[in-house]
Amino acid sequence: MIWGARRAHRYRQEPLGQPPRRAAATEQAAFRRRFFPVKTVAYRALPDGDPDDWIESLKQVEQLDFDILVPGHGKVGKKELVRLFREYLEALRSAVSEQVQKGASLDEAKKAVRLPQYEQWYGYTAWFTENVEGMYRYLSPHTTR
Image (cartoon, rainbow, N blue to C red; front, side, top):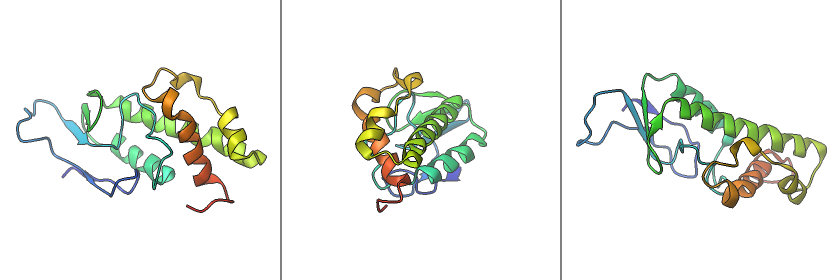
């Protein structure tokens, strides 16, 4: 195992794993399912996840020595895609936090928050408002986690 991830997604804690036996290891690669999607927004309403922990875990992954990112779903990519996904979560957190601090309701936040720089990412149309909802519930002092 290369690295152990903390709980950051709706699934149990799972370590970053070694490549499958059939994989040829010519470059350093990071393999992990459901942890760092490639140019894809987070899944649905972030169920049972901890966005702050996820962000911190992604920062730790960014410190690892690897070139190729092999997610469990989606396209294979380069290490920089971990940073891009972390930046997405940080932008989402910041935009939703602003709405929570203003006292916006969940419905108001879902209408107000937009991250146009990510509109071309997979899942944005279907899941972005759910991402807002999940982050709102995480950040709002009026909801339970």
